View 1 (cartoon, rainbow, N blue to C red):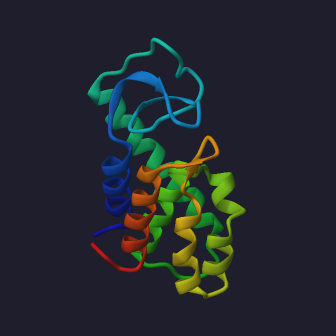
View 2 (cartoon, one colour):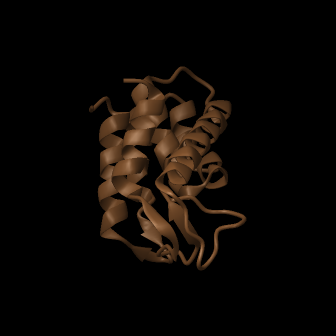
Length: 144
């Protein structure tokens, strides 16, 4: 499985797709497969095609961003899992994460444990994020 396929599967599984804008648990206007940003606000509606196209563009963009931050070789599964995490928390947060620092230092096992750190939204631990991070870690560690 390619890194892109790993990332897309994780994001689709955990984001779900909603075609009417809503506020996520962190209070951010969101639509489609977890898309945020300019133009996404109350009352915005998308078609399924719009949501799918935006997801494909965004995941590729996030994967490019993650690759730029890596300082050592990465497996397809590791790249897919880290891209899913970055998609959810933002490339800036991923770039300053202990997970990335440990991975780049060659401490893969310790890096894998860092997925669990990213389980809060709006200051609260969310079971959905706990579950997502466990799934991302499983993929990162080579699980399908």
